[in-house]
Image (cartoon, rainbow, N blue to C red; front, side, top):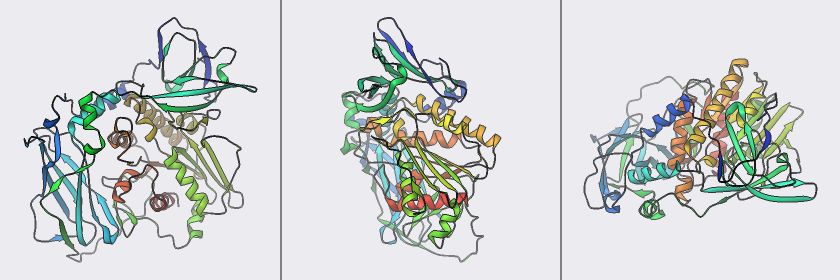
Length: 508
């Protein structure tokens, strides 16, 4: 199909033969296959035949590896986990999805641990002890290795878990039809292809309605599963996020040797973000690789935004940034765009201080129970290619939550397309500030096949590795959401404000 020079997507009609399946059949590139193969290599390939032979959190045991009489701040605590199945047999392979953190509730402190899979049923969890006092350890088997294998296979089985209904508009007439990345049937279709990035989306063609009259989309879950009956049991709520038994309650941590260390440098663009990336203390986020600027007043924070054009591209977890910024800084006045349905575009500005704040949702797939307009739809790479860039431009991006319900190759292709667009932006305007927010953990009781945090974890690995060689900055929402002990896709205001403090530090 044709693509306008500006990168717009032009819809075209297809007249196809009966029983044709419409989907993006473009062969994967070498880069896409490389990432897919690398990720697949860390995920076990298992066939579940007996629930009792799967990992049991209650039968597994955790102990301190090489325990000491005294623990000091700055040291590493290593916890060893030995996994057993429901029959009491020791597991001989790895692949379990574990969430681990240390915390001190009275200090409002928390930090995640780095999981080392020994691939023999044993794991080492390494924690950095960043505060003194009684420190507790939380070890949760989020999914057994058997559930991980099942979720990975099911995810890559197809697109059928979600379907979209599109609304075509012709004057006062409206008609609805099915849309998606894959359509089965004998009817004509409209294909919305962005040739440059090998991206395609389809809607069933409606008689007497032009393909370009597609105006709204809405998504619905299908009553469908790619899991077997036994695999469904593995991802039932009672078998997700189960605490692993420990042979200790807590450790006492002291501030020992008073050795003076050089203060951390202020957070800036281009710094590598390690795993874990920081810790919470007294409800304040503290990166371990840099220092957040000490803003003494809201006016000092607002000065960071002066003479800047801030483009925020992503999902509703970044839409929270827009609302927090406009709610905090009253000089930012929002525009009434007279839209109906779910927000797809938000704009605010302060003409006195020459600040533009712009949030836009990413393009397909956008999974939402409310309808939303597609008339300003553009892929994130298209949006980035339209930016002039420069010292007054700030770009914030986040991809993830809406992709969890679709095969991973769709996410890989999108991430690579965004990466290439950011690379082009930094080549023509190297002083543009680019910040990447990882996706955060979400509710445990969500439908695991569609929305499990395992999918988010894998997607974060893909994003971090893909962008590792570019001069960008990171806000590790995954790390923060677990350390703050939040269990909601939309994080509390306190966490969002700490993310924004880090963002402001990067752009000051």
